[in-house]
Length: 224
Picture 1 (cartoon, rainbow, N blue to C red):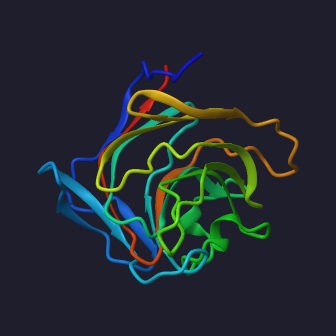
Picture 2: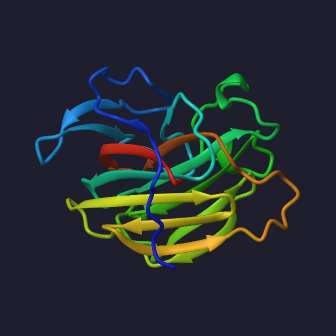
């Protein structure tokens, strides 16, 4: 099938003209708008000195998006001591707005543990440990419970390199594309007792001892 291409309406395009007023930080770090290596305005996330699994820099858009969307953005990772995660379809187990639930400290378990109050999917890239050693793979997981949905080669292993990432969600079918090429995908078998993540928020997590990433050209488009 290949990487799915959006044909519908642009639901959100981030130019950072309004700063970061449409985003919310959970955890640590200092998200800010910077000029990236291409001279573009970009979101910089960092939680330098953090430990994987502990409090990280978690940054979520305040709006909920429908199902059947394509999320596009450019990623530039400065150091190989940490990893970057993209969340899609984040909301409460019973469909609540995630920000209406009790506050979170930014530890990973707040979003993915089996007793977490949120449901979502997430995919990890540039997966280095806190010592700068690559962990070998890129993972798709469903939450709560950190259920492994798919695994493939990490398509974003080069540091200080621009990658264009595409995250597609069509119900239980999710894809990761890099530079216009399908990296890996899966169809959720829907055997878990929790409701299938569908609509919800998008967000990013940067975690690791030297993690600094720039995210630019963020856009959400409907598939049809």
